[in-house]
Amino acid sequence: MTTLTTAPLAPLLDGLFAEAAAATSPAMSGLTGEERMRLIESKTEYLDLYGRLKDLWLPVSREAGALLYMLARSIRARTIVEFGTSFGISTLHLAAALRDNGGGRLITSEFEPSKLRRARQNLTVGGLIDLVDMREGDALQTLSVDMPETIDLLFLDGAKALYRDILELVEDRLRPGALIVADNADVSPGYLARVRTLAAGYLSTPFADDIELSMRI
Image (cartoon, rainbow, N blue to C red):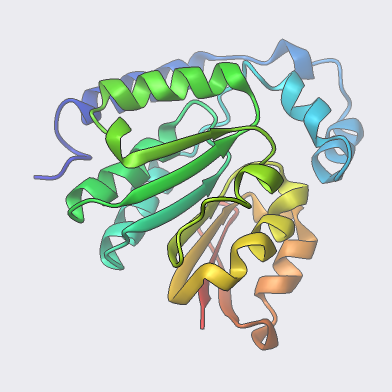
């Protein structure tokens, strides 16, 4: 039995995935595909993009959530950093792994206050809030202070244009063997160029549905 597969977390996740599947994003319906990609890839307009997406769930899939849990468990992670909390589905999976590893600290950052409030509620209902340090604001600032000396796992699921910047911000704290999981990394070519360069200190491979799985060496 695990925290992930038992109450209160398992039924909570069932409800959250169902709610996410039913949600829509009218704020994005007026944009062309080209306009969406411009916002996604921009380092200056991502605040506008995520302001438009404040009511959109943007969750990891069930499979990706299970993968995060298993990776964190397998390396016995005690310190995890997450870029992009949204409504907290991925955060719940990562915090469950910490609980089953015997405890630890998960630092997660989210720009949109309304999403962070809902994520905090979900983590409280799931019985995991005590493991999570929730930070509101631009992750380039929130993840630059009061960070652990070593990081076991980094999960990137915020503004894709900032993946490389966030990685480089915490890079010196990634221990040898630390894992970096980047969702939708296919739209972050600068990030992929970094982690797929052996000389930069990583081994990396595309994995599952648009996930890049990397290891600090």
